[in-house]
Amino acid sequence: MRPIVCAFVLAVAACAGCVKKTESLSESGTMSGPQPIDAARAVELFRVAWGEKVLPAVPEKERESAAYMYSLMQKEPDKLVARPESCRACAAHVRELEALTKGNYGLYGTLDALDRDGDCWAVMYQGGMKREIEGYLTPDTGELLYVRRTPEG
Image (cartoon, rainbow, N blue to C red; front, side, top):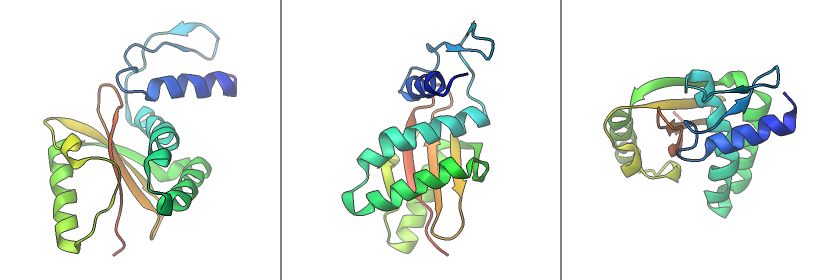
């Protein structure tokens, strides 16, 4: 697939509610139906959403750091992993962590959006100290609900 077509398909798929409606070109150039969201697809949707949604939303003082994280995700895609997790349990864990450390680690979205029934795709960039990020996407549409930094220690 040509890079421009691939980038366009991924950008369209990243929008909330579009994944089920989106068709894409297969390697042979024929149309294929909607792609289910599996771990690999969740990782791709997270990478696209980081560039399109997270970067513009982070405060100016964190933009350089967020842009650096984005470049690392592009260079080291093998450090991105996705697993299904309970949305509500993830929200509770983040709230507990923030209360314990008296910090706010959110970069995008709200914990209220994450605090919901069912599972989400938890996508983590495992970049080492000070370079770990976790984001949560809906399992059906791939909508990005919340992104947080992982505190050191």
